[in-house]
Every structure is written in C-alpha cells, then in structure tokens.
Length: 384
Image (cartoon, rainbow, N blue to C red):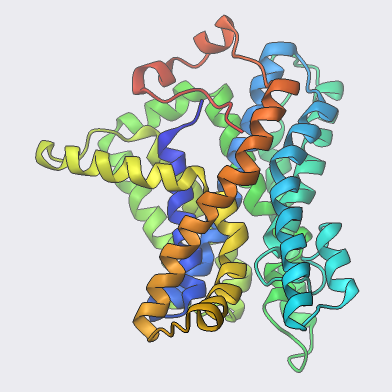
C-alpha cells in the first residue's frame, strides 16, 4: 500500500525539478535542483522499508527477487526513453556519441556525460539498489541479534556520511579551479550515497523503533524545534548558489538532514490545520499525491519533452509560444506526457511484475509491531 504523504513529497520533489529546468522563475531556477536530494532521501527510506518488511516476514532478504522487482520498475521505462531519444536524434540529424548511450545503458552516466542532463541521479540510485541488499545480507549473516540485525546502522551511516563528505571536500579543494565544475561533486555515487543512506537510517528507526519516534513527536516543543532545524538546514540552498564550495560540502549534508526531518514530520504530525482549511488541503493533497504516483515517468520524460515538443509544434502546427506560454506548456505538458508514458509503459510492466514476482503481504506479527501506523492511518510500506 502507498503512503499518501510520501507521494505528496514525491510530487514536491518532481515539481521543484520541473520548475528548476523550466528556467522561468528565478528563485526556483536557483533552488529547484534540491528536488533530487529529496528524492534520494525518499528512495533510501522507501527501498530500505521494503527490505526491512521482508526481513520481518521471512527472517532474511531475497536479494535476487529484490533486484528483479527493482529492474522491472526502473529499466523498461528508462530504456524506452533512451530508445525514443536515439530515434528522434537520428530523425533530426543530431545524434549523440556512442559512448553517451553506453554510459546510459550501463548506468554510469553519473561518472561521465550521458545523453541527458538529468539521468545522472538514476545512476546513483541504481548503484544504491545493488549495494544496499548486499550490505543488509551481510548484517543479517554476521549479527548476533537476529531480531534486529540492523542495530549497527547508525554507526554505518556515520561512516558513510563522513566518507562522502571527505570525498566531496577533496574534490572541491584539490581540483584545479580551471577544470572544476559542480557535477564533479553532485553526481558521483561515492559523493552522494550519504543522502540515500540517511533515508535508510530513518527507515530503520521507523520500522524498529517506531514508538520512540512517535513519543518524540508527541511533544509540541519537539515539533517546533524540529521544524526550525529543518528550515535552517534547507535554507542553505537559498543562501548559497549550487557552485558554492560550502554548499557542495557541508550544504549537501544539511540538505539531506533537512529533508529527512521533513519526511519524519510528514509522517508523524497530523491535524494541525484549522478545520476550515482541512477540506481544501485534503483535496489539494489528493491531487499532489496522484501526481507523485507518476513522479518517476514525469522525471524521466520532462527533459525530452522540453527538448522535442516545442519543435514538433513549430514544424507541424506552426505554433510559437512566448516565454510565459512556453513555460506553462512545458510544465503542464511534462506532467501530462509523463502520466501518459507511465500508463503506457511503467504501470503495465508493474502489473506484470506483481503477478510474476509478488512482494508479499505483511504478516500479523509485523502489523502488530507497528501500532503507530494503525493509529495515524499510515499504511505499512510495501509499494512499488
């Protein structure tokens, strides 16, 4: 089952990225790229949640089954987009080099130029999908606590966080300014894995120490302090540009800490709006959650849509837009086209995947171990 509030965060993330690439609203052109960082924290939380849930059911993790399910989620839509790109580039006579396509195909586009500017994040996530279940299996195998073999995760996160920070700092301060560009820091997996792993850590506390988190957020003071810390951490993207050395080192750490706090607040804090606003916000949230459900395909196709759709309109229908109309066409068109492509490719494959390789349902004991979900109306993790 899906968690509506996390789908709303997905919507926020993808809208930030869309408006950032639209280049029309200056403030979002500056800060919208942080939507990827929100996606990273969400991915770490949700994907680890699937593995935690499976461990609770089976006492182990089926690594091969996990990879098959992830592959059927990611690959068909992605490779379809790459194929369409290849064909379109051939038609317009502007082909990419073979190396760019190979980097995309093998998901190493975050270590060298790929076909599109936005697919580097998929490389980071793909490496994460491969490494996380192996790491979890090692923890399960070597742990003396078979009820909670993940108890050492806080220490593992500390190691990953410090390592990634040092890699970022080394890249920033030991690369010649003549050749340095910010993607050297923002794109490589070994410099960004901490964002995803922080989501893994939050997922661990959510699944194994839920009562502690719930008790923490029962205090109004703790809610206020958390909100202030989240706002302070996320403010770094307003203060500094993406090329700033502080942002590329400490700032990226502050961003995932801030988005992690936002994630926890979205799950734990409820019924704080006045009654007269709740109905309107519920309808808005339902719309945003629906968009968030399609966030992967919207993210995949928004740059190709931006690149090709205006030219198609000019050539076939002789339609030209002004700046405002072009931005609105790009924004709405990217969402609609992403939804259509999800329904055409992503969702049919997911239905087939769930028939052939079902995830499995939560056991009675697992549901009993997460009482806060029943009390708050939040469904257990287990979505695609």
